[in-house]
Image (cartoon, rainbow, N blue to C red; front, top):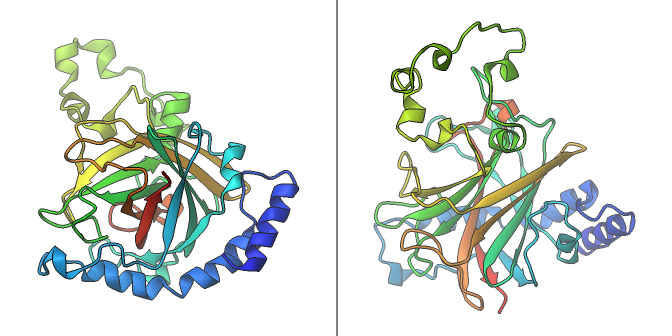
Length: 317
């Protein structure tokens, strides 16, 4: 961020708003970061399977996210521990390569910010962005706000920032506002989206357990999106390119969020030690991180999103 942006951020902190970033500081700080967006995008798209890994430096990116070491990572997005560290502003671009595309003329979120902390056992990411309203219900023609962070499974092997590529997977943590609502208020009901609807009976009121599965096939086969007893607002995903996202068999990540005064603040945490198909974060070593953002109020879903290219991620020893 610029010097003025830093000063304004400190002034905001002194004004007893420890968890928020000043909108003026946020906007001014983004100007400097935007200057490197083109180079980062070109580098991200240029990492394809047609080139040998040895021909590239996977850490030759323009921005660095420092995961500072603390005694215990905060899980609360408004915890004051975050305020001791300056956020990094990330310029975003509309995803217009794969359908459904997001075009400039559709309107898109131009920037967001990120901080990171770790305690040797978990690593946490705090992400924030401005949004006109909280969109936390999914229904017919209604979509949810969401944000994701992405890491290469093998940080020494460059891969596409656009969800990885065959043989070079990425590990994704995706938070959804609708899942956050379900964690806090219980499983979604039709009346949440359509308050005037009336239903006399549900299948489970009439049929036995085996017969009910016919009416809930996604739940029956274990589709995590159809879960009824949600304990986390974050899904861990593995991907090797467009159309390949798969729910990871291990779901360890947690998340929490706050929406205040037109701004989302989200925290996602995950153990630093991962399996062979998950990212492992080693204090004192480098990896990469990229972000994606969905505005449910503007119809964002699936590939219709805004994204930012690879950034260097360094965990403090």
